[in-house]
Image (cartoon, rainbow, N blue to C red):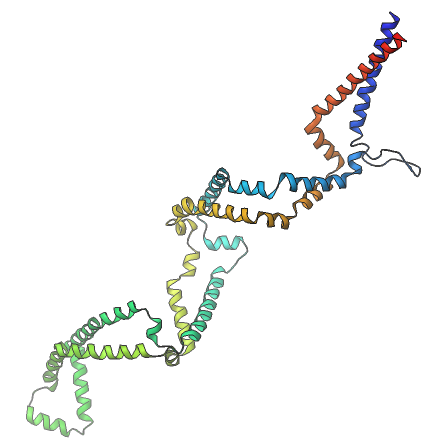
Length: 378
């Protein structure tokens, strides 16, 4: 009976010692958190292993993340993965669709980003672009004729319109001289013509024509002249000759005729008529985007995401070097408190560490049992 109690006692003592030893060893990984001194003598094994080697641990974790976890190859595979690209496309499409459906104007968006007076800024940029483009074009084409910079299609189109222009001019001339205003104009011109010749010619014409009004004689002939085919051909020929002369003008000649500043001002005015910056900025985003929303969201976004993924995949190694991920991990780990590190490790491996404690108790118990049998036989 005494022998059995001795063996049981030795088993219990061995289990307690084994379990306590393993539990203490686990705790000594983290504790004490700081070194303990007795006078000037530092107590051995203080601080714990992880607090003592936290810098080395942080550095090794950084290297492990870069060399084995977040490798360029693994990230590249992720960017090129079709499912990943599809998921990213859905996210971008959702966000972009919400943005394009806003009633907010572009001016309000710019103001939220701190860009005030956006209309004036855009117009100033547009004017600066026109000035720069004007100077470069004048330097390149200044000594060349106008026909060089005009497209052949435009030249042919103007040539084809000249007969219509001639017909329009004659038609308007006929309408004018057929009106009361035209009649008064002819009469005034005749009076001025005759008065300049001291009235002698007028008296002679009055002698031959009697009481007939000269205006009534000249106006029908003038209208007849304007309506004749020969007149239209004459006007067309003259316009063609003048148009051919204009085409031979040098660009710098046009600039001299109209003035450099006047030309640039005129170009800016026409550009502002076509590009209504203020009106554009006051228009809601939903209205601006409506004609293009489907095309942008459904087609452009997937292609853009794929292109971005391909671009990033080819440059991921350079980007990772620039990001210095290992240093980021090291700095982040170094900022952790020892208590937090202990909590992180225990949250992951608490059950395993308990099993190590129980295993120590089991081994201690077996050793106690073995010792009991050795004592029994001795």
